[in-house]
Image (cartoon, rainbow, N blue to C red; front, side):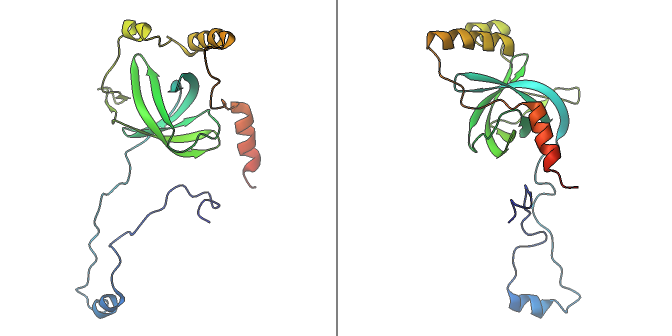
Length: 186
């Protein structure tokens, strides 16, 4: 029922863990009875909205995706269809910044991902990975400089039969936007 209502997050207790009924009715009439909230004030880190193309690598395939929001612990990406929960990606933020991540939410062309290591401040109000790889190290490892270069290389390898087909379908942004508009009531 919760998923049918399009609810993505559910909150547990707000003020205290469950209290036995006897204790509740014994203490409730008293003016001294207080429930002290416990736990963190926030359940997740602050998110920054953005609209930026990045790459994700899964097995031996590179997919261009849209980064929709970003926090120190995760992100929302758009562009791959029906990715299973638990899928592991290597996120390519560009400029030698890579981070491992796991899909923790997936719905149609949107995936919520959790980073293996938290991002850090870049000193200018943004976020970056803890480490950067130098361009010549990436080139030596066969990592492309751009999605176009990677796709050209993939096409050549596919023609020789030395590469597998991609596991995920890249979403057509126009079709996805149309589907979302027509699915919205009213």
